Length: 405
Image (tube, rainbow, N blue to C red; front, side):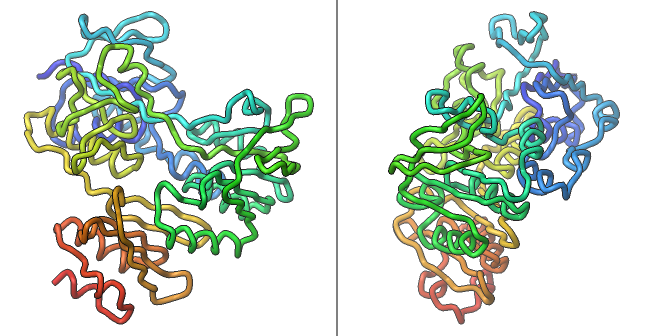
């Protein structure tokens, strides 16, 4: 039997790695070290169904506690790791104790960027949402009629806006860029999502930055925007991106670059150490990327598990994402990095459309808003390595399924 695998982190990638190894009948000792006090759980529903009270926390767990004992997976909760001693092949825990490993996996995820203390980010009532504790604190604040300011018009900010409107809050979203979703989606997708939010009463202010938050007795009460506007607020949510949790790797001398560098086998610069999920940076079509998605966390972890049991297949990501806002489902297949052309295709019903992305004539991604057929077709074309002719996509009367035959 192989020596101990230690997994730092207890999120989606960590669980997927342990579960896949057991699925492959690999019975090496596994220890998962989690900083939180709860079993591994799904994070995306935290800011949606869990915050809305529509899903209890036990339904977010990947598996109940008994699964870990039944599968001989040791899990230590409330156990942050302070250091990796590569020479000794040990990790140093928060209490100074050490745990040896033969193989180490780093699945530490990412941390939301916080608003700087210098502009009031440390005031009470200012939130980021990444874990259960964040969601639990925010839930106590989300009452009808309260005024919420969301800083950042990406997917996280817009999803928070949708939940808050559902709960009856007054919501304003500010975005420094020229438009919402500027980093992640084309103008066509952004325009459609802006209209949907406006129809639900959300005020979206683009080209608008935050100058300062103003407090009273330590609690946020107002915001001063970069254009000089002052607005009264009760709650602020920062949705300004995340930072890879690569510090523990960097301190150990493992190569990092806005994440932990890994090769196609998910190995770091130390061959005994793997990294996966939101904290890992890998090469994709000649570029270094870091994919922040459930799909990547699971698929990369499972690919690493196959390597650990002797496989030699490189990880070839087939990215897909989703975002639920109100009754709108935005589904994304592919990765639109480097696109130079888009084609807009109307869907078959209200608030239904898709944006198809091309790079030098090659189909690379699709955003589908309430259009499952466009999403499924685009995803399958990408998996098959087939192009999507632009004239066919632009013709709303064309049969997308014919592209698959």
